[in-house]
Image 1 (cartoon, rainbow, N blue to C red):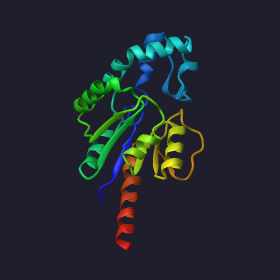
Image 2 (image 1 turned 60 degrees about the vertical axis):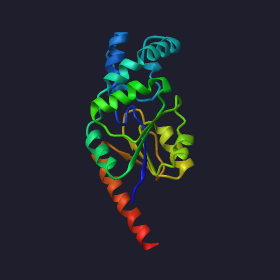
Image 3 (image 1 turned 90 degrees about the vertical axis):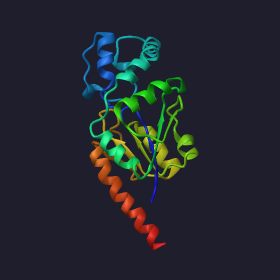
Length: 196
């Protein structure tokens, strides 16, 4: 039974450590991934919020072009792509679509659609495309999507998303754990369809 997967990109398909080397180099710092215990990075840098926002905006294309793939993401996503539809829904701005599509092509990651919405509020887009499951690394996004869309949300465990989660948000440590959970979920879905 074909399902439509809604998938965040940054920190989910890309390695959640991607940004750290860029920050350390730009601001002459030595922060580690384990230090990042919240999603907002401003408190970790030695510049104002406005300066950091400006730096990030100017460097987004380079960061996104050079971000490494999360471990195991390619094999799992490409396996799913043979039987399901993969809709990547990201807070990146729409002006970064060419950079994003090029990254997917260069890394050999298959996709059906990429939607860059320029906002962290992904609920309307998830509803618009009628996704059946979502993959995310941002805690409040994961909880909101689960509560509003009533679909399971896979939350990739990071130091910055350790708050409690409701039952429909499933914390995994890597793409192989995600694959195991989804395989089990798909079998349940097929069984329920056969029974009804």
